[in-house]
Amino acid sequence: MNTPNALMQSARSEISGFEGRLTAPGDPGYDDARAVYNAMIDRRPGLIATCADSGDVAKVVSFAADHELLLAVRGGGHNGAGLGTCDEGVVLDLSRLKGIEVDPGARTARVGGGCTWGEVDAATGEHGLATPSGIISTTGVGGLTLGGGLGHLTRKCGLTIDNVLEAEVVLASGERVRASADENPDLFWAIRGGGGNFGAVTSFLFRLHEVGPIVGGPTFWAVEQGAEVLSAYRDFLPNAPRELSGFFAFASVPPAPPFPDELHLRKVCGVVWCYSGNPEDAAEAMAPLLEVLPEPLLHGPQEMPLPALQSAFDPVYPAGDQWYWRADFVKEIPDDAVQAHAKFGAEMPTWQSTMHLYPIDGAAHDVGPSDTAWVYRDALWGSVFAGVDHDPSNAEAIRRWCVDYFEALHPYSAGGAYVNMMMDEGQDRVRASYGANYDRLAQIKAKYDPGNLFRVNQNIQPQA
Image (cartoon, rainbow, N blue to C red):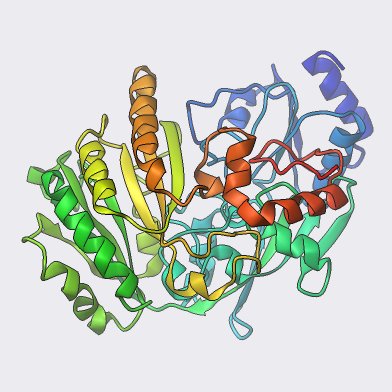
């Protein structure tokens, strides 16, 4: 099987009863099928297997294992490092696994591994319910969840993994199993933060929370006020009520409504708010920060359904842009770090480039560092430095800014990072991101995937 045609022929003859679609180089639609969210990633798989159900997933996993083929699992395709695809090997595409079953009485949702968060928000929002997710609704459920899940509801409801009740997993052996507190509890522990290292997850069962209308939107100040705003923010937010979340950002104002024309493309710093309590209390919750800072350029929070805020960034960051990002966990932001942030925030190379500090306190701190694979339960923020632009000629400029920014701030970090926002940065970086939990994860990896079939990820190597 040294050629793509041979790989396709072998797959068609050996994967009997496959209900989905097999696509190889030269087939109609191959380029569309291999495309991922980050256009900086340009890989050419030997076979793309778009599965119709969990049975298809099991067949493809077994086929890849039997032939010792490189296997990448793709849900939403948003991974910045391109870890949902590969060259020459097999891409296991889950995008057709779209089932969503909401049980309003039990406050649960069973969600297919190929769903996006926008699809989940639409289904749960009909009942005034939600589970924590990210900030871009086109993100895939599987990738975000397995890496932990940071977003607007983290302070009130915890990480996404804190709301996973069970999962259906296809193991490297092709066996389909359930992972929960009662069935395969070691696997259940590992997949909550351990990424895609342990199998292909075909469905999740999530706990839902009552979330009515929220008050959300940005408050922007001039980028030159970055140090002043960040200093006040770092002191304010950890002491704010859990219902109030707000991530700090350096950004440029999008050149479109509802933003005023005079602010379009202006570099700013600010906070993107989400107040998930009684909307009438939102202004009072935000007031202690606003009262100590100068008048903002724009104060835009308003009452809206949560899905409206969850999808607000979708037009700003469509698929097909160039992306390069780095990340870190942060326990404190000393004055020297504030000054470094202010410097690099003012030097954003393109209007889509940005830096975010996502809060990780509140309900996320109710879970212990060894209760799930996510070890940084004492971090207060997850930082991400993202260089973004549509033009490939700017790829080096956005990468350089991102790396320089990261390297300047990394000395002030907790050491590891949110694995969903890492590039391919080496094994030491993966170990640092799992800390004291890495050895236990390596033991579980050796049990469920001793041959490291699932290695196109932030890889946890099986313990020898």
